[in-house]
Length: 198
Image (cartoon, rainbow, N blue to C red; front, side, top):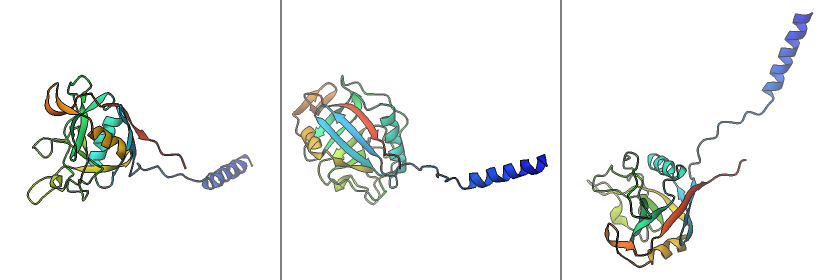
């Protein structure tokens, strides 16, 4: 009798558990938003994980570890780009992780308001520095026989702040011979805007 009752209890428990809703594991947000708080105001970029998965993962690593906090926009060229994310406010270059593969062939173009990875002449040399396009810079896109610069998102709020940064007076400052803001434009904080739970 006791075995029979125990079997009934187990059966009832299994039935009850089978009726409980199962929530699937949450996949990463394909389009995470990152807020940049700067000394001239805030702007928000939306990243495209589907088109640039390696670049977005790399960028979010730097965001999540606070790497960009206290860095500056060290290169500002009106009508072209603002570039930052690599130097502290006292013009010391920050140590980065290893470079990442170039994802410039992902179908995203260097259009006004997009964010892309800065690099040197070697195509697979991007680490932490990024830039925001101030115009449609198609010449930075990949061409036959030539790598481009990998776009991985776009500004969705605060483009007026980006333009404000683009308008600051520039010149020779610290290690930079030109195009550096004479008054530092500081990224005080960069962080991911968390999604609300369902």
